[in-house]
Image (cartoon, one colour):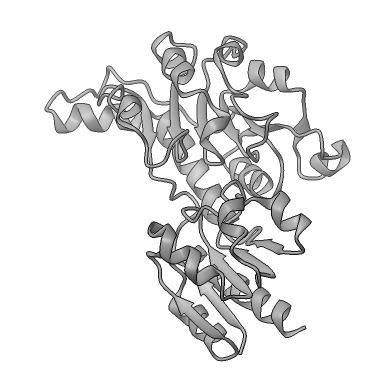
Length: 308
């Protein structure tokens, strides 16, 4: 019987559906023990991971029988995709399965930061009662700029338009007509920086996007926007982000992803209760509902792939 290895959390119903067909080894903490992981991966035809398992070349070299990698999520920067491609290992992300969750997260953060809710909350619980000192704004009438206009970006645009926001996007791989059909205008990157009240990042991490948002970028932003990153941490230079906030080049930020995860003390020690910011632990795409969708999507894909 073909063997499947699952190294991180997966919904039990989906694990059970795979177990009906194949021999499944399910250990949600296996990613923490590289030695045991190396021994187990040598035995299997498929491995299913989230983002903590580092499927680098050194580990994949031990996986002589491996034919399929299932990613319970979208980003592939923890997987050596070049090695997989060169060695006939098919990599399957759960594309689109957590898009609703991420899109809701972006809108929730945009609304919260426009209304300065983090600052209002801190002031209220400390007894300051900042009813007149904290400014609150609406999303309606604001310009939301999307860096990247894929599946998640499109869902964010639909939700933002319900609130009356004007949506623009920068994505060189999208046709203008496709964006216009959704009521979205494509712009250059510099135009997006200068026109947006809120900027949300929806890009993969590549050599081109690493440190894409840095002090030079923040200096091009004319409307002191809110920055939201739910894609990959290294797209933003975190030191420059903090400097931009302190120099009022931006008016707030929400981060769900970081240069280093878990987030390091050097960064979070700079965050104070008086800042208009939201930090979450890479959970924008993780909801009860998305876990079910993501898990069953990958379960169906691995069953079909190995059955062929």
